[in-house]
Amino acid sequence: MTALTVEQWLIIAGALLVVSVLASKLGARLGVPALLLFLGIGMLTGSEGIGGVEFDDPWLAQFLAVVAFAFILYSGGLDTDISEIRPIITPGLVLATLGDLMTALVVGTAATYLLDFTFLEGLLLGAIVSSTDAAAVFAVLRGKNVRLKGDLKPALEFESGSNDPMAIFLTIGLIELIQEPDATVIGLIPMFIQQMAIGAIVGYLVGRGMVAFINRLNLDYDGLYSVITISTVMLTYGLTTVLGGNGFLAVYLAGLVSGNLAFIHRHSLKSFHDGIAWLMQIIMFMTLGLLVFPSQVIEVAPEGLLLSALLILLARPIMVFITLSWTKFNLREKVLIAWVGLRGAAPVVLATFPLLAGLENANTIFNIVFFIVLTSVLVQGTTIVPIARWLGVEDTSPVRPAYPFEYIPSDDSPSDLVELTVSPGSPVANKRIVEANLPEASLMVLVSRDEQFIIPNGATMLRPGDNVLVLADKADLATLRAAFEPQPL
Image (tube, rainbow, N blue to C red; front, side, top):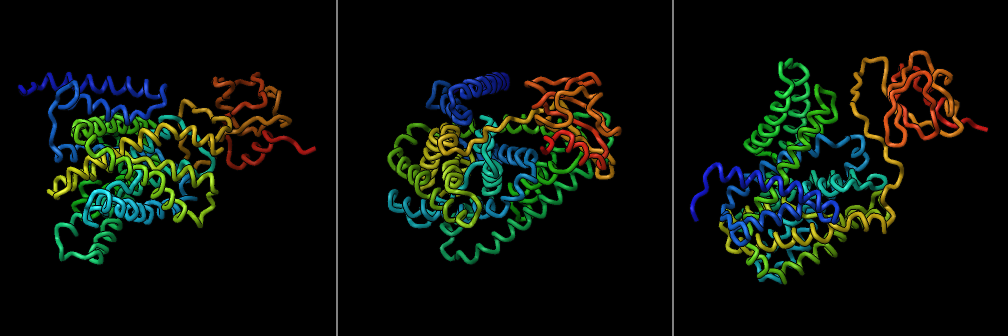
């Protein structure tokens, strides 16, 4: 095949990105996860597809996927409200650590018999598919605007964002055990502690340090602030890995810590990284689609289907019900958590580790992992909404409006911006603002009514159901809230 010129590669890349965006729109209407379409586009473009693009470089695929995954995790952390995940941090960490280990044991034991692997090779396959994928979970839950009751959504997103370090440790550790017969499981424990500790420390320090750094800068061009956050992701992952820590954990925590602090251009930078995350998902899934040979995946379909069914219907539910047995999640919520065990790019990325290590059954492992990911995204990704409705755990309460601006209060500010809802029978209901007898040091900023925004004045009538943004002194907030609540009979 004649080598393509730079211009031809740019045309191909640009066309694929446009097709991917359009495919995501079509997928949303058909109920098909966009990630599955990205993979499909990559496979169609590959050497066995209509595109005929030859790509067989596991190192480059792993490099691109690692970089993309770091940015996806950072964006996920940046967009996570820590107040939402605080109640589920402990069960989330148990799912992310002990849960991955249990999944690896169940799937690994089955793989040992089904594939005629050694026990360590079976465990390696189990470890690679043990974690739910942050990119897949974020994309499906946020892309489909899935609204779940209680702590379900933050629990699922926190688990998917924090369990990859455990899967990476298990994968690397098992490869070491396979390659070095003298190595022991006990010898891997110090490595695990080191990776988690360094990753957590660096991630926390970078998150706080970036906020302090940005707030002290006075750049002439606003666009340069996004350069700072991009460099933060790259430096955090690279530095943590060089120090012997887990880079993925570090970038996720850096995003989580900084995203819950006030800093300049916070809203625009979060939107910027959301766009970067989508770009990285497209690049990552299309690259992995290019890397796979569909004919080889079909060859392992029977074993892959059995292992996929085992993972979805047995290993994941067993793990969830055991690890969450002591939590407040009820039966229906546990069933949904068990079902939303989406596997995505992370397992496929981890499946390139045995390829690069030159293990005997590396190709078989890669193809089976790819088949499991396809099955998971296709079966679980397309049924989250109907399953949530069937279980009765979908949140059907009115959606809070997304206001066209962001207010970040400072701790020493005497005022605060609060959102209040006009309740039927409240003192302000069906009154003009000028007649509402509100505290003098308060200002009606915006009224949301019937999915429209109204800039209020004194003559604006407050109707039951209106959502109102009010800027007021903190000392008057209790009085203000009482004016919007129904009065006792």
